[in-house]
Image (cartoon, rainbow, N blue to C red; front, side, top):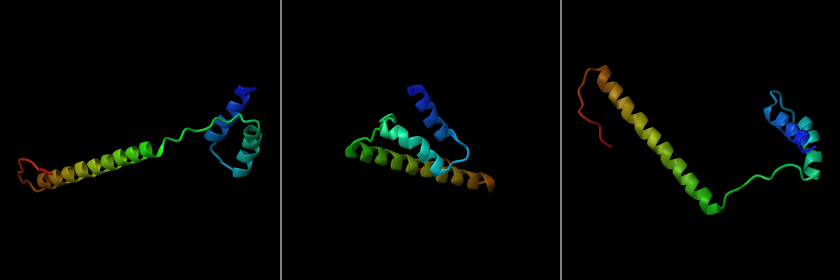
Length: 86
């Protein structure tokens, strides 16, 4: 029985055409029977640290993008630049 319920939840997640009403009709009995796994939500300090790491990663990606654009401009116009530092 649990495998059939798991397959229903999987079908909802992977369905190409989504309708809230059809999803609710499948999920409601599973929720009533406590057959849907609960999701893990990390503690506040862990979420903050993860957000900080994500933000730093986005800044580093922007930094790399800007450096690459600067190199592309110098290459396009035939300019020589030893190194572009931060």
